[in-house]
Image (cartoon, rainbow, N blue to C red; front, side, top):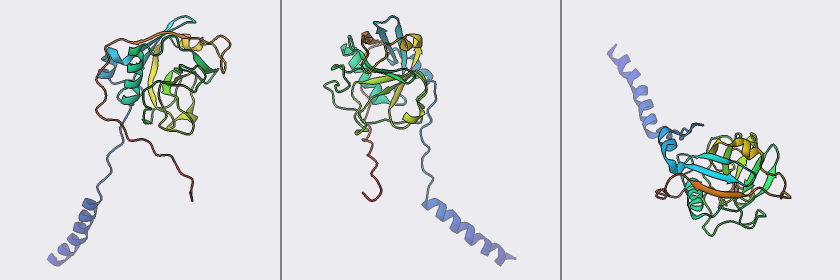
Length: 214
């Protein structure tokens, strides 16, 4: 009887040793559609866009999801970079894109590009995300877009860093076109609080996927 108990204990000990050698991976960050209370309470995380077509759009920024992209737009807004720039690419039922000083989609700020901060958040109506070239996953700089409707094909491919809190009806009124004949401009863009300190560390650039056999 004693021998049988001993033999049963051996495989149990072996299983315990195997489990110890292969710890479970850390859980992925859990993001919620709503900003955490501390994020929502910080006035620096509220971005305001006054439109030439009328109305002001208020956006809740999400530094808990994409801290470096949020800091970039906070910085540029504090510098007055966006004031007077147009929404140069507006596709009805899809998105409105702006933030290019050249007004044709090829420009950006003098600051270096921001490495991608992709998340599980979906591209829902009202979402604010950073534009980039198709060739460079880490090519975000100053151009952004606001979703006019859901676009699940963009999920995990563009960095989401905010969502419209109020004024979505004014976003719907942005002049359409690629480019529009009479583009809607950002009269003034600002954050409600002082520019915060920069994030502690920048993320590593996202590696480009290579085709099999490449």
